[in-house]
Length: 85
Image 1: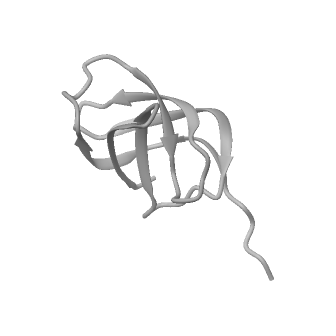
Image 2: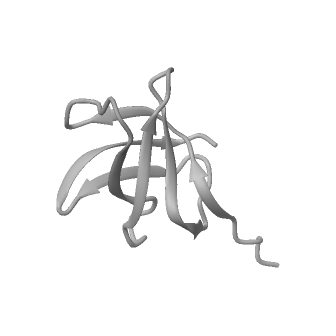
Image 3: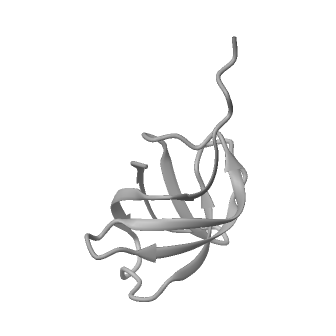
């Protein structure tokens, strides 16, 4: 039996590693959650504990804890972290 596909419109990656100065304001960027996943427009908001909330513009399927969330501006990697919830 196949597991039900998990759809999400928000996820919270932790241990964010930024390749830019950490944004102080919400940042619009593309987000990729799996190696073969298409980048999707997202709003990344830094939380008080240094983690982030990623709000996908459209719900995404197959998002699970333990996967990476990587943020892009075109071909430029801005940062990323491991999805916790």
